[in-house]
Length: 203
Image 1 (spheres, rainbow, N blue to C red):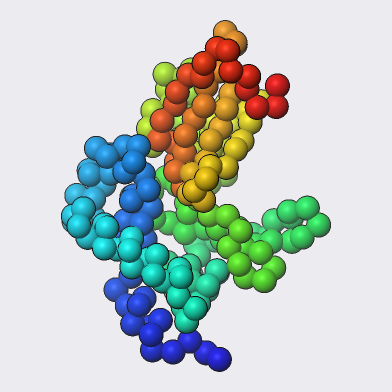
Image 2: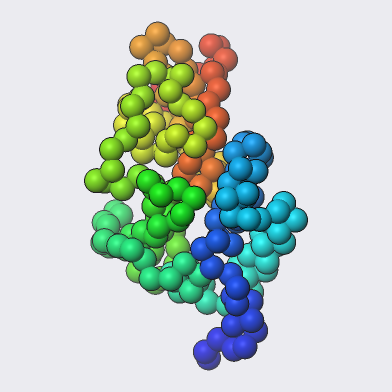
């Protein structure tokens, strides 16, 4: 059965601007000042951000609204680019969209063979230069994505958080100091030094 008027009403007025507010809502727990500045550039208030996020949660829970890849395309439009990606024994699809708040990055969705979204976050395009990271001090909020940190401070250990939007990367520096980098939607939010007595994952 095709989706009816209910989902059409839900998505009306919900596009890239509103989708960016959804991403910002999760980042506000870490970087409220950066989020406030981003909201100003979108001409949005905190009240609107909360309302948009609540609306997005209703959309996600609605059985009448298209899910997975169809949902993203309905909100963000056709992807700017895409490619097949092999994940184990399965061939998946990776789609990328431009988001004005982060012009040097792309919003990436990993799409399963059935059209479901397996993972989604901000990434740096392969052709874009990574930021210069001489040390931990260069890991400033919103300056890096997961791939930037994992490549510069390899070997790094990845760990998903309890919330799908959050991710952690644990790494060590030549001085044997261990750090954990916190990401929201793939974008760096904070870095903290671990307790010297704590054993890093995988060690």
